[in-house]
Image (cartoon, rainbow over all chains, first blue to last red; front, side):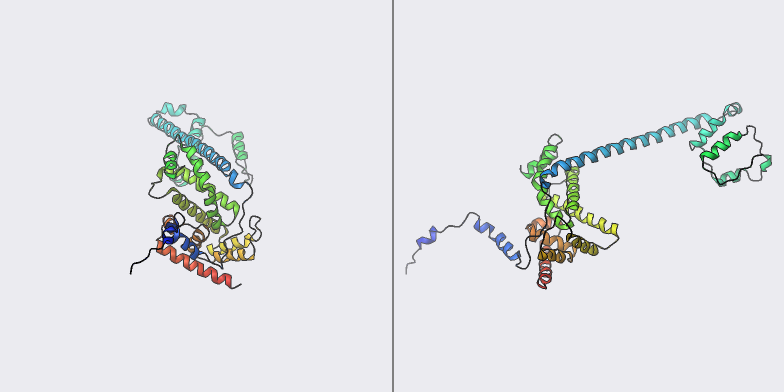
Length: 167
Length: 179
């Protein structure tokens, strides 16, 4: 028996991409639960998304300027360290072979600056070692620190609770 | 503008700014909702979204183009949001689970949440899920992402994602039908 081809069959058509999208649509249908709402109730302030780029650029510019500031501070710090090292090197080079005359020429200000700048790395134990067995009465101060300077130092360093007696 | 052209322009200093603007314009909303569903609060979502784009801008040169740019951005957004929540939990000295409960509790007074009782229950149910299931559920149920893309974003196999999603849906349905 000869089979008749339905004319209607060739007249049917499907939307474009119907079959290629079928899997996705089926998956979506399966993945949608009747018990779970699709709407969450979250809102955004009006104009939020429209203004977002502007605020993002502001944030990025602020961060960039902060980063520049940090970089400059970092450069200052590095420069200071470098300068200190150079100064230290020069001082060590020039002061190591000090003659008696040169030592005598050093003022108390030079020594103070040297100590303040951290070139004298002495701890309590090293000082005790240096002065071990030396009587305090035996230490002669050829250039005694003036009384006014001591009071000023103590005032600046908030040593209020100490009772000081000057002879 | 097509993504491959955008990437090329992003990597060139002369066209970087223009391309970045196009990228922000194209993806800001999708990424916002992705982040918002993780952190729940609008202001937190805004902070995380900004950080995400800043990271994209700074790291575009290291983007290897072995995945689509939007999956790479989604990955950054997801990591940023999760990292934000970890910091928040550490700040309050509470566990991640306790933080989730606290976040849902805060929704009741949130002016940018006008969900009804069911929607609030839904958030409570989502909050009880383990972190990975929570993210997978949001990405599949609300954002309708393809498993292949999710696999690239979360660096997890498609099979594992399907299993996670299935478990998440069952748990949420059970909780919601208890009402």
